Length: 84
Image (cartoon, rainbow, N blue to C red; front, side):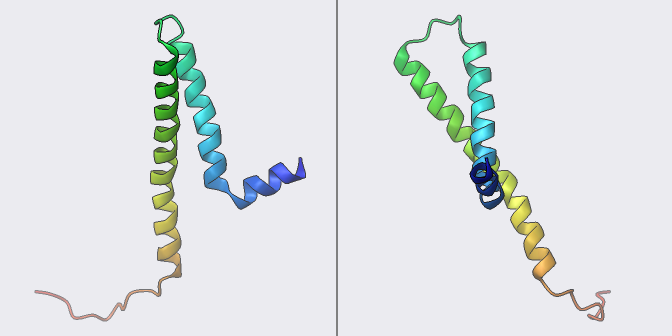
């Protein structure tokens, strides 16, 4: 259990991707269970769903990166000339 906690703390985006992928695939399987898809179609849908989950986590991560950069950047000079 300690290894899982260490992994979660060390890799929050990977963890988010895994958890979101599991949830999205579960919803996909539950929603499309009666459609009659072939095995190849299921595989394609599941792979696409995992990719979409990864893109979502990556895009959400942009905000974290920007927030970290703004905290690290020095404050802007307040005495810059004003434009008329």
